[in-house]
Length: 554
Picture (cartoon, rainbow, N blue to C red):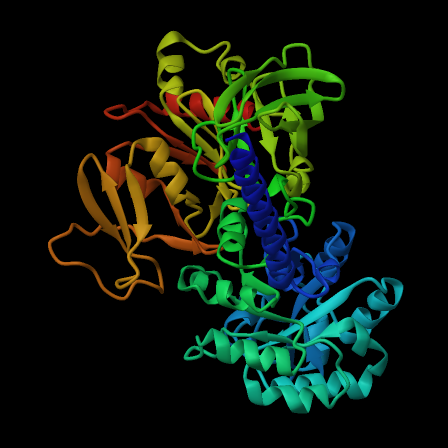
């Protein structure tokens, strides 16, 4: 009987061994043949800089290199006199990125005189050549909405020394031969223009016959199984454009080898660290970029892996330790005011450290600013935030009560105060300061953030009418966007006050907030104060509230 059992165990062990070996070789065949040469993260449009994406600017390229990217995608287009400009396209990007009066191509001289987003340098091929010569480890992936062969021919003729560092993307099978004939060694097949090609076997045959470097596809194709099919042929697949670790994990599970990204750093897109992300303390479904916290520091490490723990340190000082997927309150009472780096050390179920992630903390007397490392630039815009209670000192009880239930904003500032609490206007990784957008000097603030603070349940643009739809106290309203809204839905009230667009965000002013909520407002010298519902103030009280506002924003 023991002999039978022993033979059974031996057979099972042999079977498991064979399965393990089979799985190992399957993984080898499913990975790119030169996996070590393939990056996990490719910087999209030179990568984000100061929260601005797809700038294709010199500063963005240099920052991407400093951040550790070795493969960087750059958008290219011809100027009117046949030179190469680094821009996503002329038809939709010229006005937004270069500040040109209209979206159309300009001469190379005009392009050089522009300022990208009013602060960055337009990148030229001469500058690109200089940067690549100094950084031989860098590869540039080209993208163009124009004549791809013409762009790549111009590069080959004028900058032949760059060919080994440039990886062209091709958009149709037919482009391969003429571009390969130019001398480019590695070529990527991207599918975003091949809208009818979803045959994995046919794509794989082309890739293998022509030794294509990789295949790139939109993240929207993750659920089609196409990436899995290509992966089974040992083809490197990239998905674009992905800016969260949650989407990264989804893409990799769907068969991608790596991603094109605006904001994720190369060190973030490494296993197993990519399975973990810090989320806002009040919202576990999104990855944290910027969060302003008061009444203590709360840290919220999320993961689909339910086992494991995380310990947060500043230097050698342990702030707090506990399980992942749980909000932990950190002890920062003995931490000095100013800037710090928080290191999150992540442990598996066996208490072995498997990853470490760094975040930025800016501690003030009244609050703390928690940021992803990509948002370092934001700290340069802050010196201190005012204590709300201190700004009320010397005022009467009645006025203090009004102020404690009011909303304060200032033109040029991304900070607001709502019912005594400090908040930030943020769009992605960019601070969105209040602006003055009309001849009357009305102060416009981010409509979404302001209305959320005022009690609205939702506000969004209708994709058909291009009007803003706002839900407030269980009723829906519509607001038109200047020069954008096409029509309105029937039987839904339309607000008389229009919305402005700024950096593609809806911005609204005091008259709109009053029309929607009934809250009166005080506005003067670039300050906007929304009063509590049912409250009106005298001229003297209005001036006193303005003095409080000046104390808050001094």
